[in-house]
Length: 160
Image 1 (cartoon, one colour):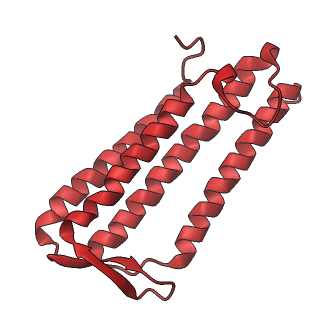
Image 2 (cartoon, one colour; image 1 turned 135 degrees about the vertical axis):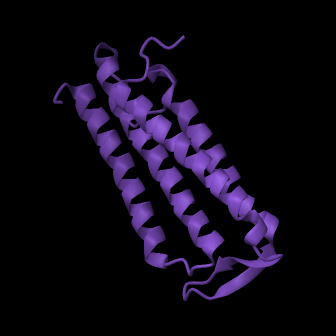
């Protein structure tokens, strides 16, 4: 049993994540009949299609989205002592450290869902996927993780 339930912010982020995942699945199902039998599934750095697959491959991203978000949602519910942190946790400040980590994980989960949803839109509409978009999303996600660990470390020290 988790001694510290999720906050309202964390529950909201989780709800938005799963709504986005559901919308991705529903959008894929609605678009299914209009897809060609063979379609581009991978693009090179210049936006040119270099791999092809059947239309059933459009369900790979939504399934990966659910798996990734499920793993992060599971990690959000871990206790502090179950986490592998890059610092020794001060158990007197457990709630503050755990909240900082959970906030970062909830935001990261929503960012993952957004990334997969946008990639799915590019796939379903046969638009060229801009390379800069992936780098921007990776940068934003890395910043979220670094900020979350920094905030947790400062909460652990008692400076936040």
